[in-house]
Image (cartoon, rainbow, N blue to C red; front, top):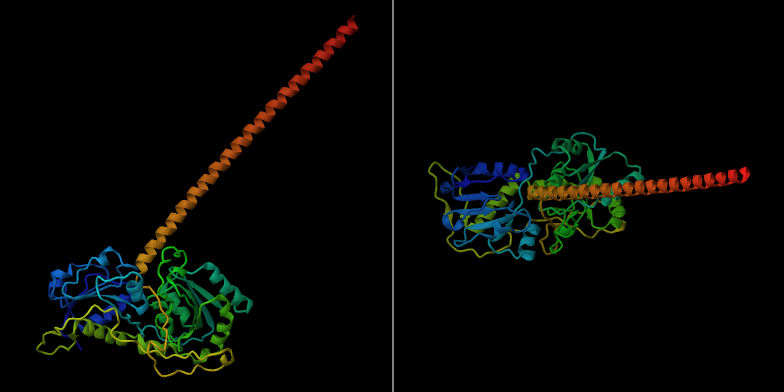
Length: 427
């Protein structure tokens, strides 16, 4: 199947988003120039869209974590562009906190490769702790708790310091994952664990400011931002407070064999499911009917009716939810209810794997500044220590000189006394 449309991709995406785009673009004719395109997918490169009234533009999600100058500069004269986010919560930050109105906002997830991230055949005996930009004391708490329980077969994966192959290899042996991470707009690493049918216990966030070292940076962002923007009860459990961990850990272990996280990913976030979501996005916002190619290529069908600048997604995802659990139900399997709408379920919310490059650069800059500050402080301390040592040496020298003067005076006194004594004896 191939759509009778041509697309142009002028910029690369985060490599996880790019993996899905490589799959998605096979359904289109790919062109090398914007003039030949029907639709332009641009992750972080801006265009003067008013110069291309016959093109449709899908911008984002990599311009910035929060709206920057480039994302605010668009003039949507012909209503032919939108800006996408990987989740509704990420979109809501721009919409509600930043009051972004340069382009219509939309949210659509990028697919997880369920053909690569498949359940392992090894014995599931290992435990993974995944740690990403949270307070180090929270990680120390989890490790101390596991050690106290006699659980020694765990391995910690720290974001940014491991190879993906090593992570996949360990997931093949993992019975479960304990996740201590920041807010996410999609959270590929977590979703890849779910795709491999590994249940996850998540120490969830509620605000962006919980990201370690970013309290001041995101202090004004009040929209809910969680670690798990896509989730249901088949995936595992989540909690928010340290004191709740023991209860949820026991609950999680008691139900471990009942979770079916891969089913959730396949039904909601597989390449094929997300292709359908992207198709719906184009049809909803641009009125484009994605007819397939034939021997005689049909023209692109478009709806001439104008679309208001809506921030709402084209359709709501379906969740399986059940919040009837109590401590008495710890040992019971989770009953999955029928799909419920967004009013019945407060989905876990987030922001941002897709902005990793910018976040990493900012974090590196912060670390460099901290390192430079530490070096300056160390240098100042060394100088102060040298000054103190010099002062002590001067004081010691002064004391030695005073002692020498006293000794010399004493010797002179003794000499005069001897002289006086000799004179007396001579007389």
